[in-house]
Image 1 (cartoon, rainbow over the protein chains, first blue to last red):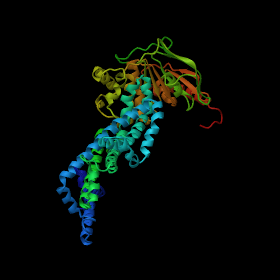
Image 2: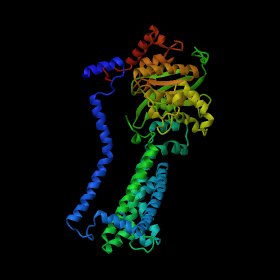
Image 3: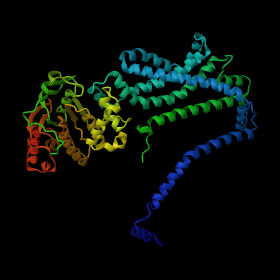
Image 4: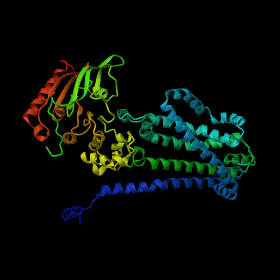
Length: 290
Length: 266
């Protein structure tokens, strides 16, 4: 049967093909792309790890210079007790710092939008804290603050709170002008305006800040620990890396590094997921379009 | 006229709602947006402010809404302005994207501290009035432009305000939707007896809708003529195609044209 005949029968029976050849090809291309989205990164990453392994083996690089991926995983398993204890410490500092950054960042942002004087008075401090590299402030912090834990927390907080503050402030100020007029017309109080208009408007901005701050809190926690150096009990991953470096235990350095990287990825995924769940019903960034 | 319609007193015997007494508005830098504007708004009026851009029609609306203060003159509400005396529809639907249609309509009540459940019936009643009862739980992004505008109108109506201000509400809609909404607006007005001030730059829209047209001119913004239209409501396709409609539209158009200085390019 030729194509013309097929179409003729189709139109006669009223149940013709829904796709033509072009559409079929397009649909296939889309299916392939949907699969490739997952497969390509995995394949490339696997290839990179394999290549790393080959370089080590082919060049006979000693493990105290560059360990192969197999050895790193093996070390991760053998040293799991020490490493995971350290991971818990780092995680604890990161999450606490992030929590305080959220409270402080959002709180300050609300204060800034409610009072011009508060903004004029305090925003220079926020900017100075942000632009000064944490590694240069950290030694001072550890001189003045006795508790190592509090010092680490403060360092991580300084790094993490600014994106939340900056983004939330921008969001609070970005509420739709007509909706603001509507609030005035209905004589909404300051609190109502904040609660019903400004905070929901700021939510997407805040969540964008949160994604940045999550990664920064981890960086802050790690960097601060490098500066703080040895500290008896309750040492985090950064200290494990330093320690392993002194002992030329390179595989353990890599294992600790791997844990830090994985932690960062997990934090980013969780904050992205939160953002998606909060915005999927209404915000442009989370909507799927046909 | 259906049994539900409110009886609106004929022009001349309507109680006053609001008076603008020779109101001037000058912006920083000395731009005169409005000069000596006087307007008596009476219960049941459908007033159009019609004019070219820059004639101060939106400024007049913002003054009445209390979003700006007059530089000179005063605006008096008969018996003082209460909290629910005003409903406003902007050119954009101005809905909160993060919440549902019903909760958007709830806003005026919410700001008075009334819980959703206590006013749920009223919200659904108004949504039914604008034909959106099935979309109460939809999000604004799921609606078409015309439907969003209906939600906006429902929100303005929900508190039964004494005065509804509409600032070119249908200007961004297509012609077909616009006509439909014009028809619906008139039937809503008949049902609720609302008093409306409607800003537009469309001669045909203003003649179709209003019983009083204030023709305005620019530089400085001012009212140059009031055109009264006695054609009875309800108005529909018969009015839109009648010779009287054409005659009033002609008169209004001529008045509008006369405000433009000869040779002026717009």
